[in-house]
Image 1: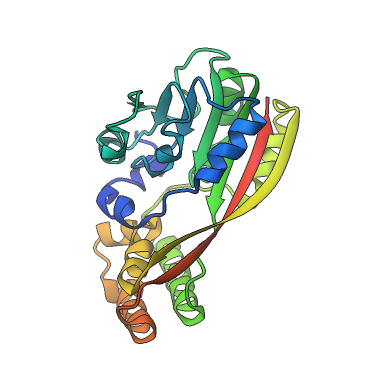
Image 2: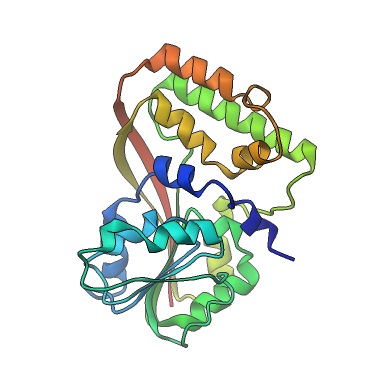
Length: 267
């Protein structure tokens, strides 16, 4: 039977790719410095989704592998035009994070962007340690939801998100399991595979309007799951969110501020 956590991210790859943020390149620079190199030999991205998180590694690595079990997410990742002028061609494998099939001690940097909380840390962290070279770096990083845009719009987003999560829990239609993000660092420490661990953060900016904010919440797995199972936008709270955001922002495009939490372990 297919992993319920994989099923959660099936069927909305186009929306995910259109509205989610690209991570800041400073994360790649940070991890390269921790790995003791200016350019990686091989980077692996676990749960790479549509490949947005792969883009920070263009021109920073000699080889790149994305691990993504969702076929529709992986299809977009493998066709990203941004890699067209790169000297390397990334590979994307339809595997799960605890069974990458990669060679022992062959990887400089392993990342999990907005994905580690969907992976069972018990089998996943030993697999990460197995493929990392001595001194190699693992980073699980996530951005806070929602980004800071406008106080009223942000509150409306958060309210809709909470309602959708509660509705999904009551419906019983999803068997997906998440592990708390605020426990990532403890999991990395307790695994015993990493000699150095650190909790870091950085700020990143991009921009968007009301339509993007509504699109962003539609890229959430809970919302997508409810829509796939026949719940209406009104039942989920999307109509109310759209109205609140339109009243507040109209058609204005404003800066969005993202806080990224980066949990690091060095092999």
